[in-house]
Image (cartoon, rainbow, N blue to C red; front, side, top):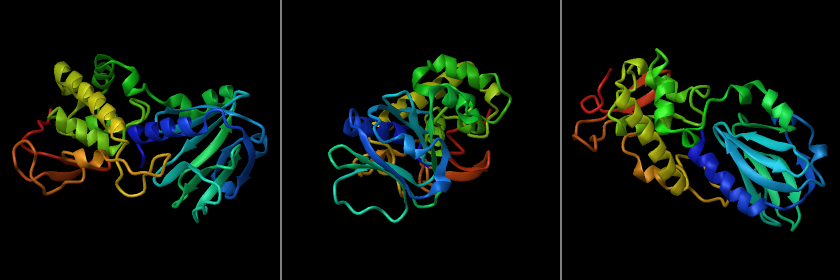
Length: 270
């Protein structure tokens, strides 16, 4: 699933490609992926900017509405050039001025989108429940939020109501960077170590954005290109490989229902 860096990368690319362009026609090919609004309201609207909230991609329009996409596992939003063949699993096509098209595709159909006025977006229970953005809060603020909960730190990092936008990749990488076992009780982690975790999380997110995100299988940015941050992974998906710090084989266990790759020697359990 695209996480914060991947969705941020897509948003920045779409903003560059689509800002100021008017939607001429909108074609909903798979009605089941629409959760709110009606595509008939889109023709004539101009895209003003593209942003991100948590793992949501937000395409803002000049009359105040926005298209909110949740990409889930395999969703993509990108700009197709004139005459470019549409993928098999295309669900929404917006014809833009200049003959390009904004495409929403999703092979597995877990992704969805809605057309929301600002008050409706704020009233959407999922949107309203989202926690703070890791890159818009200080490490100290994030650490205090984690420490206030008696729960496994890995589960809290993945909980979108605690921190927005984090998934398995960046949870595992930041826990390793801070040398914290993923099954540690968050409230038992020393305050300075929690701050270190959140500082490392912010650092890793920024580095991943600079690298265009991580491509494991399906992820592509708005230009159709892969990310390269997967080349910088230290532990994620590397079960059995040597720990980059001590050389011991990395272990993979289920924590909070998700596979967590970690080093039994380097990452202390609190």
